Image (cartoon, rainbow, N blue to C red):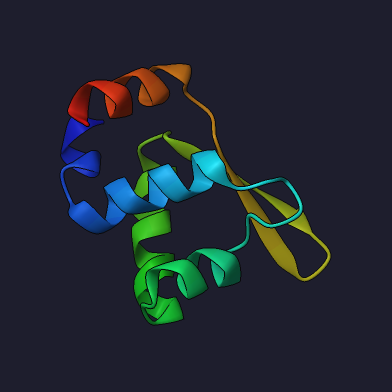
Length: 80
């Protein structure tokens, strides 16, 4: 988990997801906040999903992301 969170963009993504509402938690919302290309954000989201840090729930045409491991919130607090 820590290796996946070691990248500054992935840390930002986790922070963003933890602060987003369920209505506004898509890759588009994350991409707009970060100002990075959608493909870059999607690659980082994939790494976070593969490590079991986040999950995505399909809603119509978009996927809404959320943190699935409560330990991540504590880890993020410690890293700050």
